[in-house]
Image (cartoon, rainbow, N blue to C red):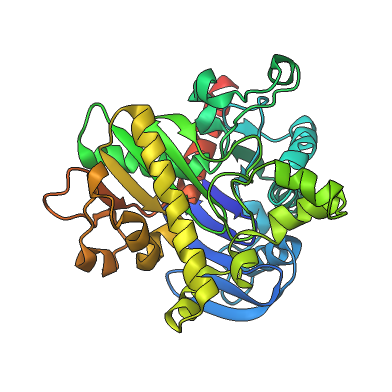
Amino acid sequence: MKVLIINSGSSSIKYQLMLMPTAQVICQGIVERIGSQEAVFVYKTDNDEITKIMPVMNHKEGLEKIAKLLVDPKIGVIKNAGEIDAVGHRVVHGGNSFSKPTIINQTVKDKIKELAALAPLHNPHNLEGIVLAEKFFKNAKQIVVFDTSFHHTIPTKASKYAIPNKFFDEHGIQVYGFHGISHKYVSEKAIAYLHKKESKIISIHLGNGCSMTAVHNGKSVDHSLGFTPSNGLIMGTRSGDVDHAIIFYLVDTLGYKLDEVKTLLTRESGMMGLTGYGDLRDIQEEAEKGDKNCLLALEMNAYRIKKYIGAYAAAMNGLDAVLFTAGIGENSNKLRDLVCTNMEFLGLELDAELNDLRNPEIREINTPTSPVKILVVPTNEELEIAKEAYKILTFSLKEH
């Protein structure tokens, strides 16, 4: 069974074509820095590897380029779109409506669109990917896996806000949690690596969007993102945690309109607002040159992560491992160093030499005597989506 995975992030699209159930990768790639004249387009097969810098101004352009390249007469990996049996999609917000992978129909698409107000940087792009995939791969089953599903195990004491009960009971205003596909995949990898029947793990997903999850015995019990993927850690363009009274001050005193505040906090804040750069690679490069804003932004980012590590260790009454994953978590030895330095009190002892090494596999970067393991665990959301898509399709076929 050939399963195409489309994973649309806020500024990127990762994709893989897999043969299931063997999980053989037929081709894979990524479109990064979407929205710029210098987007990075990567396409890899066993025989070809292409990297191009080109304008990709929106997700639709990126998705169209991917779909056309798959059937390209020279370097494509399929002769026609009919060879694709299923397309698996990552969708960020499923609200309370979806707690497991789902075959897509019009009702599902309508609900994803309705929930776009809660994930404006993601759900619209996710839905766009679904609509385009339906157009290009007409015979394929379309399956959606939700980022929020993994976090349905968060207890009410951690998911409910201290506002009048009716907003929880009648409107579902609560912590939903995000990046669940990634947190599920890497935490399972870490648990297997640790060989522990019972485990207390903090999973740190750092990309353009960032989040942390407290994972107790394989289940999400707390999470840094909430009702929407906007609070918590400092992100690429999102502020993360701010005093909500700032919003009232911006509107009532400084004359901002609500939609302007929304844009400010979700698209113009975070590392972009602090430095003028939206990509951590650029920020680290400028920091090394002595840029004070970039240096401070990195320190602020790490400090916020440290606070959540402390909070989740307390919530779980212990800690076996901290793991770093996703584009920044896996590749930024600088940020990992800033996070783990001066954390001996919580049992984190970083090995500087191991931290500087590169390795595509799960690896320890702690000292041999560190009470808590510090792991770098490469995420593979696409494989997790493919596994879930294959599972739901084979179950559906058995039923019929």
